[in-house]
Image 1 (cartoon, rainbow, N blue to C red):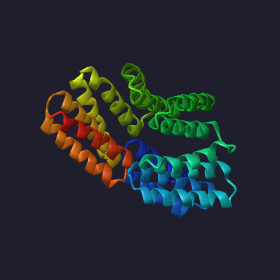
Image 2: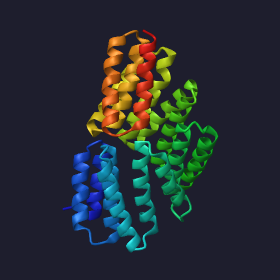
Image 3: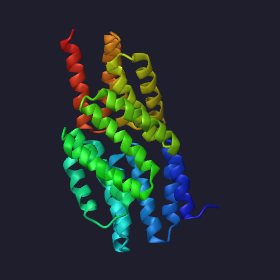
Image 4: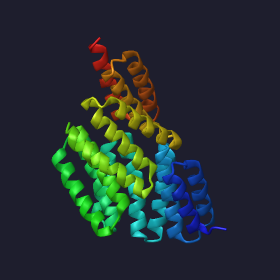
Length: 291
């Protein structure tokens, strides 16, 4: 019989395999049985991250705020910062960058662990990259890597590679993105996290497709899609369908591309991601203009 801490670890194991229902079931048992506020705050925080992975935004924010309330009452500064981070990531995923940055800037001014500081700078860098502020993105990524090195945190290093590959893609540096995403795939496999692995494979597909390595790109994007279907992560699925649509355009299969873009935009709208809707809509308009 697992104690609450054991339930948290069991839930994390399921979450890294993309089995979110099983993860949430373990987190809920841990929350119900916890008497230690540190364990209770951690349980709510992990519940928030699992809800976020499933694009259940409102539930994720609710759990993150419950985690923060418990941590604040018990004066658990690190747990409080973790709860703030869990909420900020939801805003980031939805494209509400100002709301996310407000919280991230609070965290980096707190006394937190190198691990959490690294994650926060990593997320800030990703937002800067998506805003096309590449100098700021690189600065945040470098600071993040220094934090992860001090923390000896391989999961964070895999995350860092993924975000840097995405930033290189945003800048149009395809070869750089290809190299970094390839390293990220290896790192994600080592830490056994399917969400990071799926993201790395999708980044790699997006980097090599314009280089006309279309069969390999399609295989990578389909593999990433399978991982995100396990998680039922509709935002990531939308990104996969967009990249697969881009590949079909390059293959000259216009009708297939339209179908994939349509599925992508429906999923993106369903989870309220304005940024992804905009990216897919731009791709659809470009395709229509080339008819």
